[in-house]
Length: 332
Image (cartoon, rainbow, N blue to C red; front, side, top):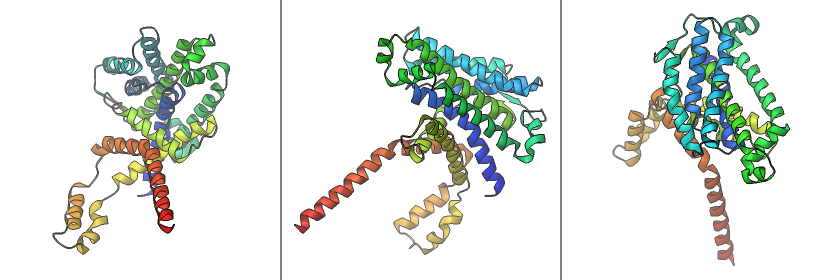
């Protein structure tokens, strides 16, 4: 793994960090399982790609964010006014966005931006070869600062209170439907911005690029919380989400570069032929090579392990205490 691989993983981690921040707003701030993300991510990418083709890449970023906000607004309308369950409302919006995204991309499954100027081209005059790293980094720093300040305002505190205790918010004469609408629109606007950036970064937009984005964002969110967030301030919680996204991309890089044949062949040579370890190592070497088609499975495993980490930790602690108790009982 060379320096370019590390830089590329960090760049992707920062760009997908926007999406993780959007999930953070809905899942952690509002406590709503919003599945609109898979659709609003592609919506932002498709709007960005089409407008970039027209020669306005910076406007494409703005359009992607605004389109994501509208998607969140529709989901909020279904939840608050039509009284549809949050998960089903997100699924309905996500399903409808598939057809809308196809229409935006002029009924093409893929829109290429090869040899088309993007937002990173003028940034190269300022940042040189690090434009794809520093421009998203500066942009996400602005978003983090904006989120931190916003959630300390009266409206922001009302949104946070809605996620903590909606009944209390309603009893305090706060319009909970409005706070949900603002929160979902904000979250999906950030997700749309992520899709808009990734379309210009990868120089294409694809109709299926949003599939599984909820799992990836949740993986980033949970990794950041498990590794870095220890009940600290809101600002640190937001930053930990982005760092978790970078860690997730680094994990993916290591997994994709792991070659079981190179690493395990010496152990296979030392294992007794016909033994269980010999058969196990042979199986891993033969079928254990990871490809890009395995990314969704890897993401699911990471999320599963991260979610079960507190339970596993508690069980280990209980087992240690039980062993200590048994040893004390044996000595007495």
